[in-house]
Length: 374
Ligand SMILES: Nc1ncnc2c1ncn2[C@@H]1O[C@H](COP(=O)(O)OP(=O)(O)OP(=O)(O)O)[C@@H](O)[C@H]1O
Ligand SMILES: [Mg+2]
Image (tube, rainbow, N blue to C red; front, side):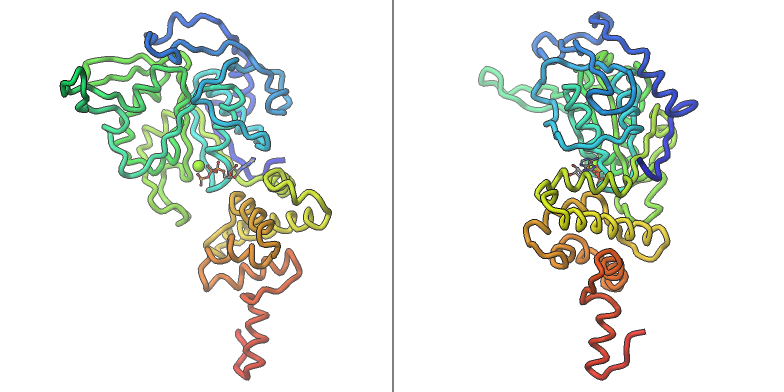
């Protein structure tokens, strides 16, 4: 069961996604697509098989999704251990199947970037991921004139950027950390966010029609309204006309405790070997959940993401020592003033005091004759 998820799409929600998927059929006819670049075999590729959502993603649905039978070098590496969130999977599949522009938003380390990649890996869909940052410029995305050597002569040639390059291919372009991109630069994609939106290459006097199987996705920690929680410095306020153009905004939150423990165990399978380690993993997830609840209640300002839970389990395997691995994986990332509260969460989950906890500090003060901590 998935907890705490909200899900937005155009009218209705989950049901609409199912109907989006229902209409898909592999036509085998790409004649209406963009001009095929004769020098690049990738631009001539198109989905040639359809896969069952039930069989591939373990979601209870009869729908089929288009896929490629051959994996190009741009297809992400398959991660067998990846666990799919049903709602977000359906949203992303609607993106692939029905050419919807899908934005996945959620807290850090919840699996947004990998979710899109792992779906693409199973569909053999060529994918490029662009990590946005405040220094990415329009020229980086669109292209620029560059001096190249041709027949021993230096000539100026237009080198297309990642955007026109992807647009002309059956490519899933993922704008990662979308909310870190500069809003004025992000206007570059305004038009391609519209369905069948063409792209004008001003420098070339060319208008590009997107390839029939070009797809656009993005991930973000915020929804473009700013860093309201204080967790995501460096993110930008995004233009609402742009947010408005994303057809589907799916939210990926933390999973249930069982699902998270399952993911940790699939990442560190050695901990499945005995019951004691499995209980330790369950308690690790409990600590993670307490930090999230504590954050929501305003008690602490740092929270433990599933990424940190996984790395705690990995560090535990390396150091074979729970308190050390906890300190190295999470506690040292927390403000000193809050470490006693986090130590208290640890004590509740493992029934073991850490030196950082208030109780331990009080005993130490007592023994040295000082006033006990309040
Ligand atoms: N459902 C899952 N199944 C398996 N592994 C997962 C899952 N969710 C997250 N992970 C693992 O957690 C780590 C973080 O995932 P990812 O980088 O996709 O998160 P993110 O949401 O994009 O984070 P950020 O907002 O910081 O970019 C990865 O190593 C990923 O493999
Ligand atoms: Mg990410």
